[in-house]
Image (tube, rainbow, N blue to C red; front, side, top):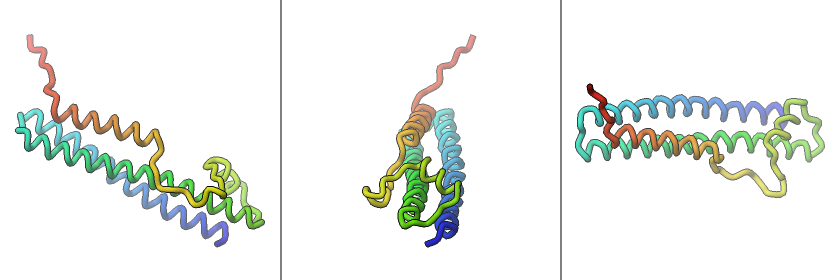
Length: 142
């Protein structure tokens, strides 16, 4: 593949990831809203469990989307580094991409795994969903 083909294919992956990210944001909003409603309406354990299960699925999907973003970035860097190793002169932007997402060609093609910030963010969002669903707010009525 040429440099422009690698860049074009990578952009398709980034566009797909952006659409999935929008879906994650919408599903997260729905999770927060469901948790708040079931808590305010004094929902039973079954209803709270369903909201929790939905929240788990949303967070799992969010971690997958984050893992794919990391994978696309590393795969782009890997493919460009492979092209550079073959002796092709790359543009300055492609050289910068190789430097930004450092890949060792000897390690082979990158694996699909989320980055630590993605895991931390998803954990915090999940804790908020759980807290919104299960913890009763304290009322300070005077």
